View 1 (spheres, rainbow, N blue to C red):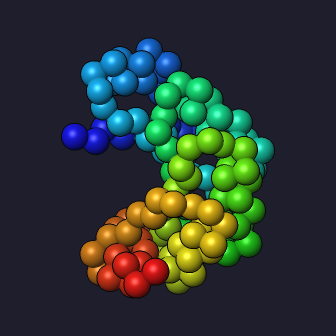
View 2 (cartoon, helix red, strand yellow; view 1 turned 120 degrees about the vertical axis):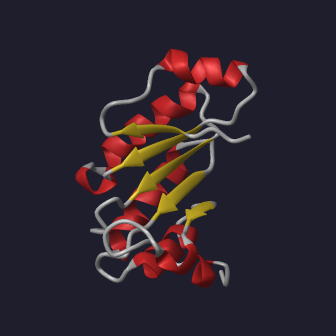
Length: 135
């Protein structure tokens, strides 16, 4: 069973909650929602905290669908360079950039991508899983 522990910038779930889940043998992934509202430095700082708490990976979410590919490349490459755990990306399609941003995340070093069937999701939807599996 996989248990994801969510966090928002700048608030993190507690260190004790992370350690409890790790002690139970669960996988912990840090999730940074609304990442368009944070600089790459803030995302790196919060992600490093999650890594130090025992997270097996960190995923940034373009919760508002506001990113363009250069935003994704800047943030993902910064996290990949500074962390020793996998980095992931969750795209929303508000600007029609969900797939392009996901491909950019892969090219920048992300190893985890979120998608949904037919792109169903909040706002204008998420990156379409049927397209993502081609990459």
